[in-house]
Amino acid sequence: MANLKEIRNRITSIGSTMQITSAMKMVSAAKLKKAQDAIVAMRPYSSKLTELLQNLSATLDSDSGGAYSAQREVSKVLLVVITSNRGLCGGFNSSITKKTVNIINEKYSGIPIDLFTIGKKGTDVLSKGYNVVATRNDIYDDLTFDNVALVAEKLMDMYVDGTYDKIEIIYNRFKNAATQLPQVEQFLPIKPIEGGDANAVNSDYIFEPSKEEIVLALIPKSLKTQLYKSLRDSFASEHGARMTAMHKATDNATDLRDELLLKYNKARQAAITNEILEIVGGAEALKN
Image 1 (tube, rainbow, N blue to C red):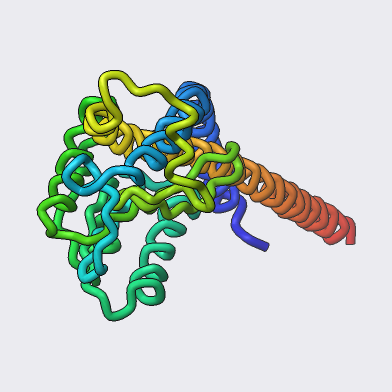
Image 2: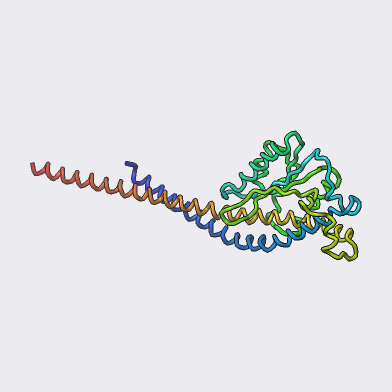
């Protein structure tokens, strides 16, 4: 039977771990509510703006703003990989790094690939085997539209000047606290609406002053919004994943503590029984 002091120390240690994981769960739950409200409110706006710009840009030539939608032969690709700066969130980060590796090996096999990483965990893993040309792990320190817009402008410039022929974003899409879905979205060039008629937009909207001027103003904003939405999605997913992971860790620690308490009580009872037997045996020996 294990030493009673050793079991007591293990029970105390597990109790301390339970306090930490429980506190982390509550902190993530509080942050998740705010992050979830932000992404749920943003999705309809982002979706409609993207749909409008996809439709409009498809009707323009490259000189009128179609530079962001012109299809080129893909000779070099940039993947924007969004993870978190902190761990203890289950498979949140590993799912994105695995998705990235699969895309590089399968979808773009034989094509030069560069990575733009956002999040320390993804940077640490992917920089060991792939070409990370830039990283912005500091973006989570102040996750605002203005800060994200600067990153989006850099990506847009690299596409327009021909550095890359295609840019995709890989991130976790928030579904609920227990479910995060790895997503791959094309950032540039702008994808046309599938099965849609580019000329149909003329019957849906009246443009003032002109379609070209509106598109030139809205395309950059739409792309910035798309990147911001992806980061917001990932941010909410991170807190949901961490809350779920800490909840499971607390439950597992509780089960382990209960097992150790049972083991401790059995060992203590056995020790008491042995002491009683020794006392009774000694008393019988004295009588004889």
